[in-house]
Length: 305
Image 1 (cartoon, helix red, strand yellow):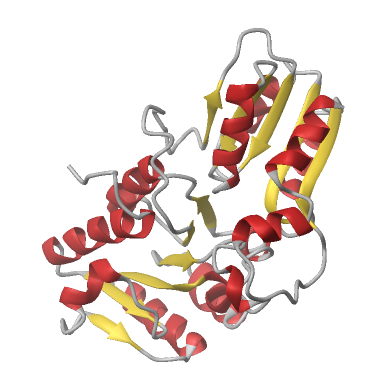
Image 2: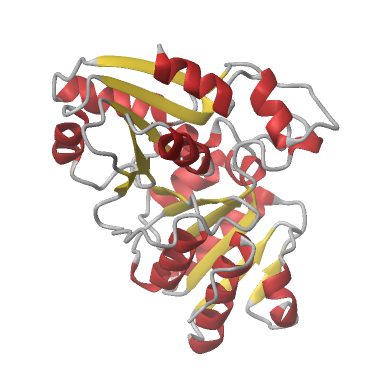
């Protein structure tokens, strides 16, 4: 059993490494990115570092998948999506190939590097490719489940992976088929925060302080029971969509489309990153959340309004 008291990346990639060593059909490819858990297998011929050449990276992965291999690609999420979008759409998705793309660094998880590394639009960008399923990993528990389940997840898949020790949801029983989980449930709550990724931690903290709030972690975005999801949301008088991505680049338009389909129009509030590039450097993630007005304090203001 993989210990969950580690960096979320180590948990994920230790399971990837273990499966790689067991299954000779598995390949790991990267664009010159580096993770500690994979250092010992970098000399393996099935580990391919193509350098800073993302388009070629996806071409190689699609070729391997075409010949019944199981390629997993990893690198910074902004580089693996925007730089090679056409290759992802046509070479992988159009052929429905079993390629797993792991985007490291969603949201502001690399805050010092500016807008080139801010993953605040890649989620919806990948959602627009019909064949791609998307998972957004929020905590160590979910990272362990998804990485162990990779051999059974078929077809084009994009996985967003944060960093840090995120062991706050170890008691939650996640169901990959379900695609979401109520991570905090208080008695007679009237407000529901729908969130994803690392902001689930902030929402949970607020809900533990304010017993009138529940939290729903949405971590899968296509193949789940959307009607049942809407029925859960209908129990609440206020819905807050809370996302580190921009309002047009993350979960907001996905949830809007679901609500529109099922004619759900309760009070809905949005707390997402502004639709602009953030040219800020030498700042912590918490500082960025404050200046973009999506911090815990800002969330509490909407919840109390």
